Image (cartoon, rainbow, N blue to C red; front, side, top):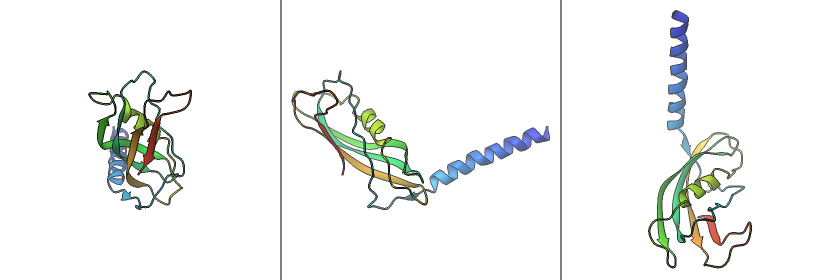
Length: 137
């Protein structure tokens, strides 16, 4: 019984240690820029058109990978005849940001970056092309 208890205590210590290290992450330097970015892919079935900005927070790992991206805030304005709320925009942004890469680091850090998503107009969209502009600002 004692070996099982020791294993449980050890596992609990590892779990709590992981939470403590995540909470003590340093903030990334303000000039940190991605070395690779991916553009969000909105499903073609979406017919709503919005422009706006989303604030995205994530952890940059030692290897430069994005971990745990989350939308902290967003502001969307309809373009043209669109009404209501944008559908699929936040999910597309999170999926794209998860693919970003940063230069390798000595320590992981927490980063928050505003990204701007602008609808470029109602021109026809070709295969693999987007009529959206998506840039970290």
